[in-house]
Length: 354
Image (tube, rainbow, N blue to C red):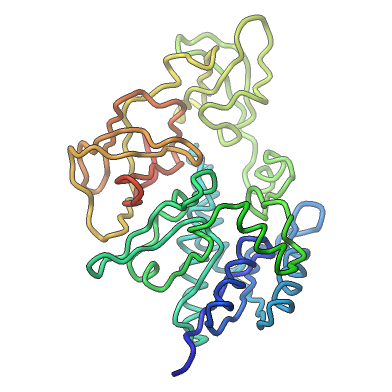
């Protein structure tokens, strides 16, 4: 009987490297695939893509598998980056990692892998897949501090049915130990943060290449003028740093945006009431099972990564979803995702609109 073939997305990091190693040890036929998603100004100063490819190739050599590099920069620009810019133009704060997973890592990559004759794809994401009565569920990872199901909520049944997450049942320390014991050179490599096309560069400097400044006023909810901004797109709800407002008293935070008048709403104090919302409306919904969850049941929801699940109910689910929280939530941000859970099972979610 022929071995089942798995194409593993290898980023050069320790998680995807161990994913490939574990599957090889389990007897699968493994091919590594390195995705290049960005070419504009991808210099070593800000983007680690060149070193990441070197690391992935070194690991593939040690494990004894082939490695292919594939260029998805056109798909990334069309499906991720253009929407990223459109959201910022609209005054919202998008999450490109959510888009990248849905459109590149589990769509363009999956299609490419199936074209290579793969039975499954695999990545180093910290999440798990379970099949129950023919339905595929996305579960949280065992390591709650590393769980990445929040970024994967837009995956569908076809994608999950073809996906393996070999590190999802492991803790990060176990993953690093497996890599070290196998002699993988990247066992202690620092986890990547952010996205390659921004890297460590100043965010405002990057956005300015694509979106011009649109100066405006900073005012309190009562209308008091307290400063000026260079563009609403440079600010996000809950932001504290970079506002440049002097004076005594508590720190200032971004509490809202008046898009029509180009005014940034700011308040003093982390716990100002204007920073809290007990409900939100989400659009562009995506439900993993293919069907919307029940209304009026109690679920848990995150409005940002690394946030504890907040008890909530879904007041309505149609073209949009209205989420009502048991306790007010801090800095709910339009453009970010609200992700709904039933205990450990990720049900899906949508993009916060208000």
